[in-house]
Image (cartoon, rainbow, N blue to C red):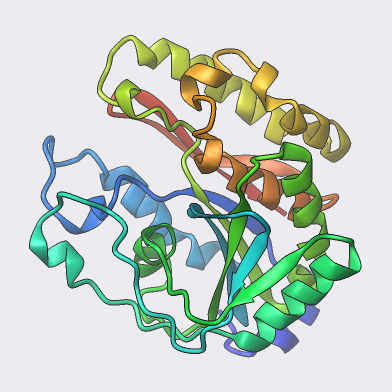
Length: 277
C-alpha cells in the first residue's frame, strides 16, 4: 500500500466503506472455549488492510458502544482507551492502542453534518471504546493512523443514521476509511442457543440480500429493517445499537454496491461483514 493517502486515493478512486463485527469484548486477546471460536473473524479483520487501494489518511469509525442524544465526535488528539467490558481477564484491561486522534477530521465531519442539517458536537475528552480499539488492533496494529470515533444517536432512528452516512460520503475521496463496527446479530441470550441458528441465518440472508441490492433499494430496505424476518429476535427493541453502524456505512457508500466479505456461524449464530465499493 502507498503511504501517501492523498496521492494514492486520487489514482485509485474513493476508499471503500466497511461494516465489521468486533466480537465479544476483548475476545481476540484471551483464551476461549472452544479455542477456535473467534479464529476466522480474527483472520478476516487482520486481512482488511491488504484489500484497500491505499493506506488510509485517517479512519472514521462508528462504534455500537457510544450513544448520545445528538451525533458526537471524539475531538481528543490523544484519546485514552475506555475498557467498557466486564468480567474478563485482568490482562485485557492492560491492552494498548495509542493511535492519535484528529481534531481536524472531527471538525470536518461536524461541518459536513451541520451543512446537511444534522446536530453534531465534539467531545474533546472522550477516548476510544472497545468497539474501536479491539478491531483496530487487528486491522491496523501499528496504531499510526489517526482515528476519530462517531457516536450513534440514542433514538436509533434508521433514516437519521442513513442520512448521516450520506453526509460522510465525500470523505472517501479524501483518503478517509469509514468503518461501522458492530455485529450483524446481537441478542445476548441467543449466543450459544441452538434455537438461534436458523433464526439468525434467516435474518442474515435477508440482511445480505438487502446490502447487495441496488443502492436506492438497499437504503429503503435498511430503513425498514425492523420488518425483516426475525429482526427483533436478532436485535431486540432498544438493543439495535450493534446494527446501526451498518446503516451509517451504507449511507456513506452512496452509489457504491455492497457485498458480503465475511460470514460464519459463531456461537450458534450467523455473523457477517460487508464492504461497499
